[in-house]
Length: 400
Image (cartoon, rainbow, N blue to C red; front, side, top):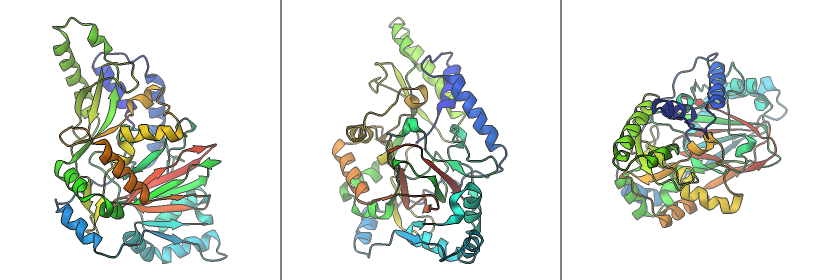
């Protein structure tokens, strides 16, 4: 999910508004501190998202249903009795084999490796595998901190304030950028819950209802990346002034946000029924995109769609299980997201329920412990995080 707090502050300032419920100074300071951390590391941007050429999803799904299912998680234990140096040497010697497993399976689960129990060892492990780190895809719009200033190891979503927020299954991409792969590591497991989750996008593509898959692909999808509930003052203007004032505000906010991101954001007024006390709300929507792609390396069709994490209706349904989402501070409020068809129409609740069911069917919960790391192919493996209690310290690096 996008973290657009800083952009929202800029957009609000551009429109000449003050957002009393958004503690801008605090979040801006936090962003500046995180940016200072990142300045010590010279990283290239993540590569451009490989959407590929259009393809016949119905025919591709039929072919996949007639084929033998692919293996998904390859578990990799260290050599028996190996020291950290031995583990590092083994990874260097077997880098080609590990990367081949990543391509064929989509997920490689390193379990019980002393080498990856700290950030330095974790970094040496992915370097041994020949993986080249890239900048966090959220870098332009976020302040996801690094575990240490000299690394490309970013903190995962560990905040206790977000502990009861179930992070649905998603591929990591923001606008025009998507890493080829990622490696997640556990430095401390939560007292309860907090499992890292992976889902096989190829299997989801295979098992979705064909009519739904075709309809989604034909119409395309788009997601909202931010909501700004700061414009109630417009309702106090004389009726004749409200339309031109709303248009002017929309234009100013759109210009401010689009100047900060590398994709075209469409601003749209929505009803303020999302916990904003009926405040008039501007919503930022990303460009349309396909929900499935052909893998840029293997050519296999795979589900590449973040509806499971971004759909507001699915998140609301989870509140019955995990409790109400704590969207109480400014950052949490504006970071709300949702999914729509490419023509901005709503997704049907029955279709959302079906996508949720198929995604959960192919999701595996990994109870990672210190010494565990999970290498994922970002195009064919989705990831997420379960709710948790206690202190959780997981981290991630992204790769070209």
